[in-house]
Image 1 (cartoon, helix red, strand yellow):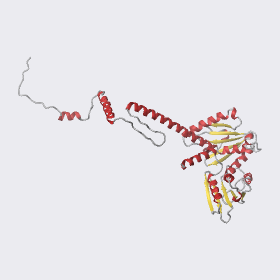
Image 2 (spheres, rainbow, N blue to C red):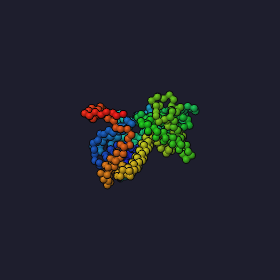
Image 3 (cartoon, helix red, strand yellow):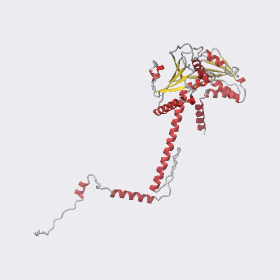
Length: 382
């Protein structure tokens, strides 16, 4: 039962793409709910070279120090203490009465925060506040992409020119942002390990193009898919352009990055790879379930036909892991007689005699009838 609940939680988390780190959230909640000073010095590692360092001391029971190390999306972004000044200001604005930015940060980390647990209210609000604290790493990455998308009409690109920026959110899964005067293009090279995943993803991309070009979805970013790299990626390294799933592009217009739409657009772009993989995984599971169900129906039909011809019934519960077969009321003697009768009929229908290698020599030597000479002589009468 607990295993099923675990998979359900993982499924819900993947469906919503939660911004908060599950491991960090669980650790902070445990410290908060203990209600007693604890000595803790713990490191947490997550996918994408993300590292957290949590430290609490008995001598300072109300404060917990949290240090965060996360790779930057792009090395071209202006950095100050490892992250941009705009990101620092955004972090300072998150729960300013509970979260305090420590300067300088701990060695080896881009950000160090001091959390005042004594100011977190009791009740349901405490879980919401700790969840927001656990999502700071996602806020750092979002701020970097927000700064790029906010400058769609920047002056550093003249008409007819574009600026290409390579971003790396997950290892071995880079994507590109092409900044143009009137729009920004996000290009995702798609790679899959299984050939079946390529087929499912290709069908999904084509459907996404058809739906996105309809009038009902005219306000969403235009999606295009191509098996070859777009012209904007000319000159990039071959390892970044070697794909088996083609290239997916989204056109980000100025109205897509205004107000509350900016945060939603940024988060969807950062999780596009995860969304596609989740869709492919669910589709493959759906197809496999349908195939198993179809196979079960065919097996039932075969069992029914065998019962009508053979005189026995086989009730097989083919669904699931167990298979229970119950043979019903047929005499073994009758079954054996029927098989012998069928075998006899087949032998009678055979046109050629049975040949045994070496039997002719054995018959000449041992089974030949001897010839006896008679004492009486007979004269042939014409």
